[in-house]
Image (cartoon, rainbow over all chains, first blue to last red; front, side, top):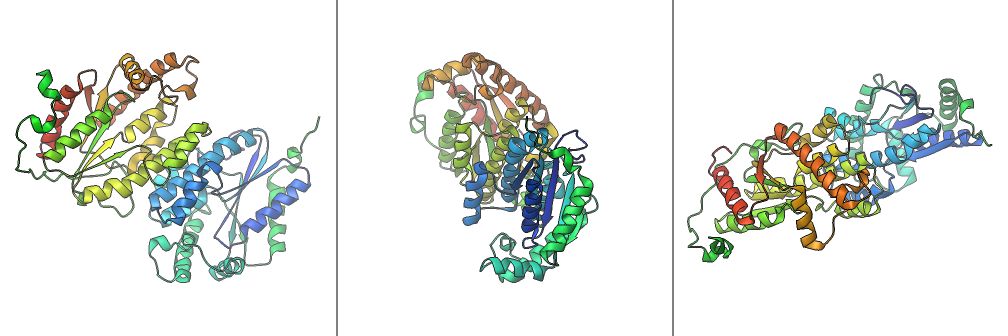
Length: 229
Length: 255
């Protein structure tokens, strides 16, 4: 199904995905987008990558103990996605919701491939899912992302820096190489999956302004009001 | 004849002192395989025993371990839902029956991949005889019964290593019921396919579900070419057949 959007599949709901490197600021942007939609009294649901209750403890155990290989890393995230997809996204989209996803299948396509999983295999895992109706890619330079992450917390995390790949013993250097490769993957699929690219090096407000403009232009928001009877 | 078969191994005659070095087999993955793993570098043998609950898999494997160790081969046993990574979570999720089919399928695949990379492959590299109590075929058969897409499953499990031998213990559903009752006087919710809503009667559902699984196994057999054994025979008779077949694999003859 990975060649049709929810709209093309006849779902009444619409799915908006945001993608970007760690520290690109996409979570801030999707939060502001959600608030804007909610405050218009629209039917909105927000979900994050790697947040399924059922799978969470396994993922965090695997990460903490560094038990994960590229294959199990990929599979456990696919499990997490499938759980949210089948139990929440599909029913909500059938009920006519606007679903906002902080990361979608493209995150797996980029990361898992950089970790060495074959691209066909990874895409095959996720082919039960439909494409988003709108995908934003927040494109920031490494230095900008790195600074944003380090401002928020003192240290980079093991997996976000790709330390499992043994690219460098220096965590910041490893982060740069790893994120650089992920960026390549994202850019390579940006045309195929029709990403709306937002320059994430600027301040928050112009990015949000552009994001809202694109959403309003693409999705007939008036159709997503709560109808109270 | 029957009495001698039940005797412990050491009373059955002298145990051979000479240990046969297995002929090296060339291993390969079904498809994509695993990043960074060269299957052709693996030694040992991977032997899979498949079959429903109550088909006698664990009895057969225990006997095979004894026999293999007596012959001087080191063994490792693996099974489903035994990974460090997700077995606990999988158990919890199954108990609450909260997972949808794709999620459950991927959860099992994660468990499998974890054991493949952390248990099966290291053991084969070290030249062990790996005995697998079920393998990807059970997972595929269960998912196929639940309507999962076959090409999707094949892609998912293209990471699996092709075993040196796969034995499927075929036991009639009626016989399975009796064996399950004899063991713990109850049928398992999942082994009865109760999630499928085939029947509200568990006994009825068990029979229907097991027939559906057998049908899927027969289909998979045509693709993956495993050996179907008549599991309705006495355990020792089955084990002797398994030993003969495994012996020829160790000797490097084709199955």
